[in-house]
Length: 607
Image (cartoon, rainbow, N blue to C red; front, side, top):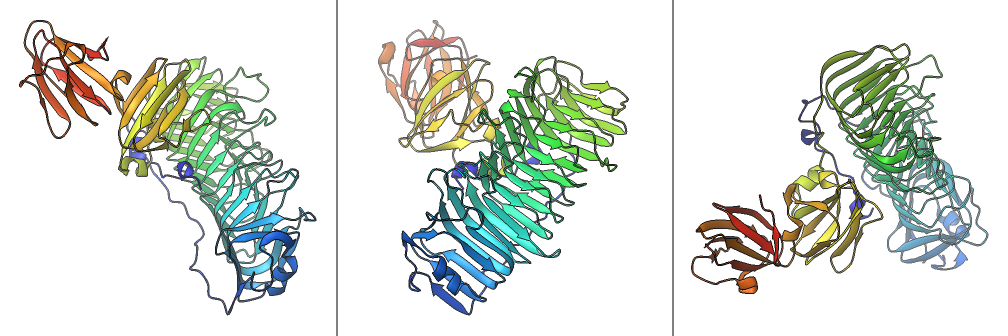
């Protein structure tokens, strides 16, 4: 998985400190067992398989696929047209080098690599080269128990109308794990289809750009767990679950500028089952495109819970059929088509953003409880929560700050309101690993209008979601440490290790370092000049890069000014300016009297 897409657990301490602390559950997933032992290990090249991609290896692979057997694939390209793995017990095929599987000219899209009635089957460490035009190779494997798929990356658009991947656990008490499966080039069908009778876990997967659900997991009878991972711009939904005990935890879901043909990009859709489905410690960023909402209880879906989760809805993420006029929802629940209405519990959750009309939360069935929830929305005629023909509802210990009504009732609806406040700024959660990581974080935010910026770091730099930072295609980290990007009213954050050597912007932005606002002019290589107005004034500031005295802009050099080893500068000025050449970030400027401060000869306000 790309470094910037690693899943990071949210710190609940920062989610909604303004309105209290709530209850948090624990996700449960299948266990990855230790690597099994085999009675026979086969090097497929030594067994006669071509590793140049010139001849198919189907016959060699099927001839050696047997019980208690591990087939190893060293460096090379391996052409496959159709391979069936059936009825095997304790079998593995594992890449031991840079092993690339490629569909041949006569490949079967439906049965490229397929298998069922297996037990303890393991497929690991392969790249699937699906980059030829019109190709759609499907990996579809089932097992009674012990299904393990790890470290698979599919390259190229999946250009057939069937799932790119399919996995199933057959036994009711069986388990399976799919870990670090990467399919980010999209496809015209489903990314991953899974309908287990037993329990299956998808851990740290990346699914992006599929036209008919990213991970479609609502039609089996066993629980499906999503742990970690990154799901972006999938039509219909990024994750679709419905069976009892299914869960999504520590997962990032993004909708931003999806293809024009994707007409309903939802985040998590609860459908086709009574649930309950549990959503916990997730981040959902839906900022542009069309869709019904971040977390959607469909007509055919039942109960669900949402805990410790942060949802951002942007003004340009709009409802289907509104012509881009109505901003969509963070949580949306349809009327039930079954007698099982179910219930919904939303706790310890933040909903932020901006929108026009309707509301970020809508319930059109009974039995909904919201506790310790913080909703903050700017925009036009945007309410907080709407209940439509909905009763037996509770909203308590929560903050709702919106331009319209906090809670609106439509039709035959009722709600028990307890301890609801307004005027609260909801704090976007940070990741535990970010709060504990080495290095610093710079955050740049525009002020309603699009702002462009560029800066350079003399060390490492990477995108970050710290301090509410969004990750999108508008921002680029170049190999030389230069970053170019644009922002409107949603922040961009970067974690860096080193010194900022330059920062430029032609627009009005707010910049902070580790959450503390700094002047954009005080970033990078600058000449800082301090001038008194006739009275002796003492001053102090810090610089996290290099700093030296300078005679620029009339600066004087004398014994009254000291540069300390920790980057702190202390000095005094009367009516002769002091100048310093600085790199990095200049901050914590204090003076005990009136002074004028200049950056590169231009006065700035340091109040």
